[in-house]
Image (cartoon, rainbow, N blue to C red; front, side):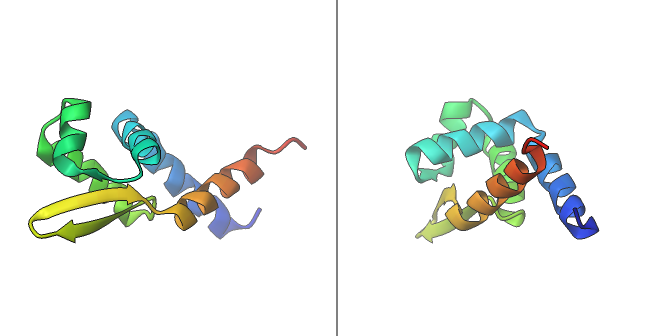
Length: 95
């Protein structure tokens, strides 16, 4: 495996190593899209904490957001999410 692929996987695993971010991905995959306040209610976490984790997921390409007035909705970015899943599958594939 090439060095840049390993670096990308290392970064991905770092992002996924947090339970809150994993929970957010699961919720977004199940719901399709969710408002930040809804995610705060589900996770029972304050808005700054949830927004921080959503921001990291967005920066690393696993989530995307859209604004509707003052409200922000988040969803999984399917193309980037699927690429991340494929990269993990390749790494964990049997020899």
